[in-house]
Length: 156
Image (cartoon, rainbow, N blue to C red; front, side, top):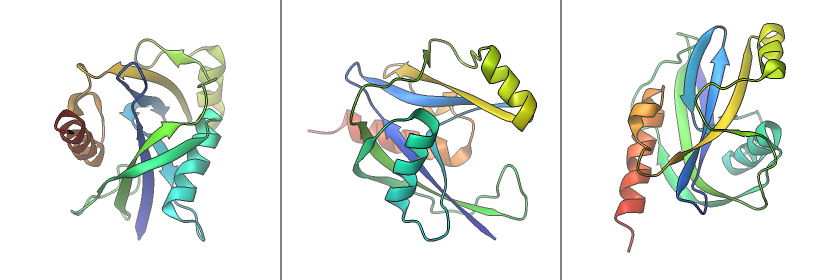
């Protein structure tokens, strides 16, 4: 079975990249914002929905960055093949959700959410100079991060 995921890479005006730190069933992951494509939904609509659900943030799509071009098994279900699609996005207004300064800095409400649902998340910006594939947890995210760094460092 295929699991299609859509993610956005957001670079703010301070040259920082937005990441999501997540606690899922006791395991810690750093990834890009986004999530699963739903039946009847296009990839851009999916990404816009995910940003609204996760951050109450309207985004605009700048351009496609990368789509998985190799076989990747899901980290959460070995019977699923992951296909991830990445876009560069920009925020259409100020970010209103709390932005943390350090990884996995969950507040009391976020810990309670994890206890109830098995997962929670917090958001932070990573300075461009410190942003690399090394901070990300998943193999496809690492490739997308390299593509993003290359694009931004060599853009005329």
